[in-house]
Structures are given as structure tokens and as C-alpha cells.
Image (cartoon, rainbow, N blue to C red; front, side, top):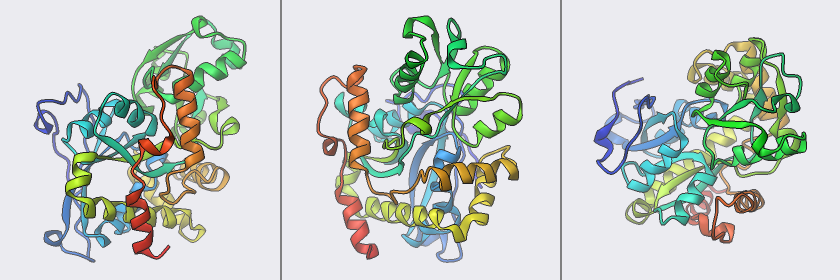
Length: 339
């Protein structure tokens, strides 16, 4: 692993924010020498189980097989991922598709090219004195962003529990690890955390009040995006990226790869114990089949995203879901792979 500072050199048009977490992975695999691989920058959010399919794409050589050596840069704020892609400072990235959709509505040069996470894998956790969502009335809850679809869903589940939007406070904190830290420090009463942090939180005395996946199974939550200028000038690179993503999800979904998948999660998500990783595998891969789409963009899941964003005014001029995507790369990748 090669770690280096990453900041203003990404372009004067982009402010990355204080505290961006940077980890650059430059692959040198036996299947191809480093000189033969094309370096391409890929921006994502802080690593957790929602990023699980990217890890085998790196470690098992699916990117290298397609002639790519991704430089993966992790950032704390999901909105920063979108800003970097739109600015053209990096060609490819991954985060919630809802951020891509709202950026596109504002004229951003960005399109979804693969589906990744097809179910919202988040638990609402809180200290043990809070027994239900109703107990969070009048309290602070940490969120990633006010425009996040997960925040919109929080408002819905709170209202169903009898707590109206103006009866609790939402504090914008950032990614899962930062939000969990806010709970542990007492800054907030609760937050939503992705696996494996949900199980770590449970083990550390912060029980789960609600699981999003129990009520909403079909939502195109996480996807990969491309800057549209890069897509026009380098379509072959984008196709090869999508091919690697498809193969990585297939590998992750295979029960034969369970033990290695668990080891890979432990390697990439700091602080994950084997016990927590095994519970995360059962929860994410087996029970919820969170990466079931194998790279395809789920039309019904995208429709759900459009409906939720429209309901809460995040999308002002909603379009058919296809207009937020470029489906051509997946179709070409699938054909080249013979699927």
C-alpha cells in the first residue's frame, strides 16, 4: 500500500475539505507488470462493508486483468466524491447514486455506470438508555448530509415512530466512522452506521434501534460514476473498469469465496475483528444479498431513489431514471465478458 498526501493538487476548482482520508493503492500483481497497467484515479468514501466489492477487484486482480491499476482515494465526505468527479479531477468514483443525480440536475458532468449496493445497509444505533426511536425526541442525530437519501429515510422512520422532523435535530458530521465517533463522544444521541461498524457498535454497548434493510429491500443506493468528458474520450477505460466491477461482485457473491472475502474485509476496514467480519458477511452477503446485481444498474431501485428525492425536494425536476445513467458501458462489458 502506498500512502501519500492528497489535496489541492487535484485542481483549483475543487475544495476537498479538512481531514480527507487518503489511501492510494497502486497494484503490482504477478498477472501483469506495473508498467503494463493503466493508472486511473478512483474516488470513494471511507471504507466500510458498503465498499466490499471494490476490495476483491483490487486484491484478486480483476482490475489488473482488465489492464488497470486504480489509485483509490478515500474521502470522509460523500459530497466531495461527487465534486471531484464533476470537476474532472478524477474520472471515476463511487458513493450514493442520489448525490450523483442531484449533481447532474445542477448541470454536473456525471453519470452512473454501475450499480454496487442494492439495499441500504444502515442501522440506527444509540446508547442503551434509548430503547426506541421515540426516545430520540428532542435529541441530536448525526447524519452524512441533509440531502442524503439516508437522511430522508431517517425522517420517515422517525415520523412513523411518532417523532416529527421538527422534534429532533440533525447534525451533519460526515461518514460512518465519524458519525459513530460522534455518538461515542456524546455529541449526538444516535446515528446511522454501515456494517461492520453496526456490529462493532453493538459489541461496544450501542444497540441497534432500527435496520433500514428490514423495511426497504430494493434501493439503488451505491453506484460507480464517471465524468462524462472522460467517458467520451476514454470509453475503453470505462468499459474495462465496469468489467472488473462485474467480476468482483460475482466473486464476492460466491459462497466458495466466503473465508477469503472475510479476510479481505478485515484487511481493508480498520479495526474489524474476525467475529464482526463474519456477522457482517452473514448480514450483508447472505441475508440481504446487498451486491446481488453484479454491476447492473437496477431500474426499480433507481425509480425508488428518484421518488424519495422528489418527495423531499432534493430533485426539483425529476427525470426518468435512465437519464441519470449511461447504460452503454455495462451492456458492452457484459457482452465482452460473455455474460
